[in-house]
Image (tube, rainbow, N blue to C red):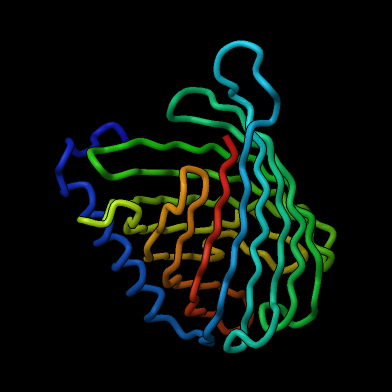
Length: 243
C-alpha cells in the first residue's frame, strides 16, 4: 500500500522494489526477442505557466523531446515532441494534460510513420527518509498514420532515488514502467502488455534547476505477429526546471 511507507533511515521499502524489478527483468529476458544496442537522449524543461499574484503558483508547463538511436546506435529510429500543462493539487499530487507527436522509423517499424498522441496523467511524489519515491499514471490516446482506429494505452511508472553516501550531488536512480494496451486496433495493437522499461543509473544535481541522469535501460516490446524486441539502452536524461 502507498500509505505503508518506510520510516526515516529504513531500507525495508527499497529491497522489495529491487526484487520486483529483477523478477520482471528475468521474465522479459526469458522470452524470444530480437536484441539490439540503443542510445536514448531525452531533453526536458518544466517551469511556471503564469505569474502568481498571491501565494505559490500551482500551474506549470512541461516540454520534452526523446531521441532514440537503434541498430547499434547508428540509426535515428524515433523522435518525439511532447508538451503539457499541469496543476499541483496538493504537495504530493499534480494533474497534467498534453499532446505529443512521435515519428518512428526502422528498425522500430517496418515502414516509417507518424503518430498524434494526446495524453493525461497524474503524478505523485513523497520523501521517505532520504529516499524520494515517485509514481506516474498516464493515459494516451493514439492516432498513428498506419490506421484509423483510436488506440488507448495506459502507462504506469514507479521510481525511486536515493543519495549516494558521501557524494551530495550524486544519487542512485531506479525506475520501472509498463505499457498496457486497453483495446484492439486496425494498426496492430492488441489488449495486454505492450512494453516494459526498467532503468538503473545515477543522477547528478548540477544546480538547483539542472539535473542529469545516466544509466542502463532494459526495454522490452511485445510485438504481435512478429518477434518481440529487446533493446539494451544507454540512456541519458537532461532536465531543466525553471523557478
